Image (cartoon, rainbow, N blue to C red; front, side):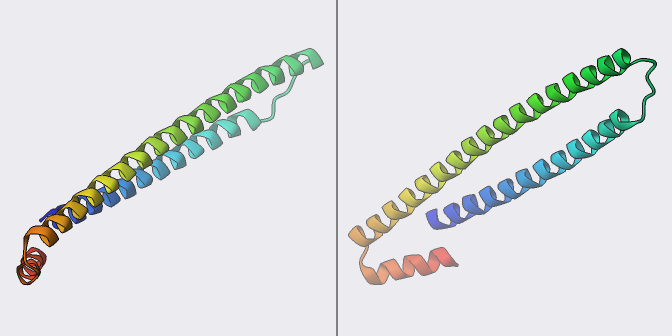
Length: 126
């Protein structure tokens, strides 16, 4: 039963991880599309009446782009941290399940005669 529970938990973890990855990819695709749209707006040709107007406009754009760059860096750092936390949680779950399986095997080998242990394993497998 513990083995079945462990297998079910592991399958649920894999499924949750795949769903999380799919959501992240969809979110990244939408973010890229939004960024491309904003870049198109920036790249539209502008006509300037003087060089100072052009410099002021381009400086403003540069500041906006630098701010976007800083936000993207912070977002990447947050995602990396979140991924690391999730990865550690999954490893902890795997360790706990492994520990439970080892305990089960120890109990079976210590207290149940081998021929009955095989019957127990066969019954657990279905």
